[in-house]
Length: 316
Image (cartoon, rainbow, N blue to C red; front, side):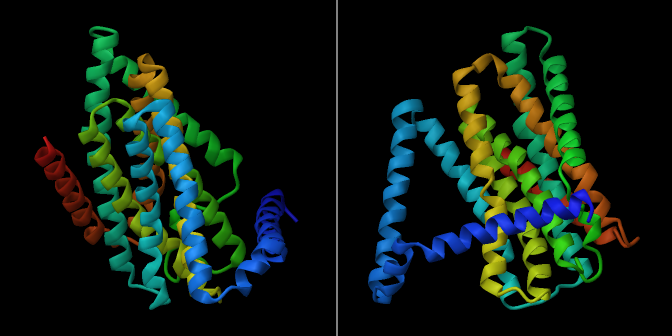
């Protein structure tokens, strides 16, 4: 058994053990024994209470902008689950449609990276280090790309170009792909947090929308192969949603970091931009060109870029 196989097996076993432990717990059994209406009301009440504690604590410690940024990163992450919903009705979609969705996601991310991270990052850099903003942001970009390069090398996973044709054909590959999506969602969430941390609400909103749109085909790419391998459809959607929920962690880290240490903002924006460009070039575009039929994806990329450029201009 290879190191990669062992790692994937351990990850699967860990989550399965945690789920079994929760199901065997006394509180979980009491919850199941409740009438359905009371059960869901209890779950909803506990969830709302936990959110009140989390958001209330963030507001008291860091202020309104951090709360808004964290909430935006949560919504962007949940878009992964929205993208997975077609898996409830279909086991597969056409290659052209999937490539078009990925191409549009790449265009959206490119525009968001340019207009919501790099341009304002250079402006902030010039404020902190007059005339050197472009160099500071460039250093941040290289650090971001190197960070994902290192993560790609150290953590076992498969790339987007392994989901061609009928997507992934084995359970091991599916979980390796899920790990890849999770790795890349962290810096995406961080980019949303960094943008809100700059104090420019518009940049944060544009980037959160871009990440949410980009997460839709990712959610579909996770859920469809799971359904094809016999997973319960709702469970497949749930797993896809969980891969996106690492984004609020990155978002909270990004926004609190630049809020507390404002001089690092230009570097942080460059870092987020470099990480996103790495994902676009390393993962998304190669997949849309993997079978030699890239024209749909090319035009979809341009349309996605134009949509985000127009949105950025409208929010002005």
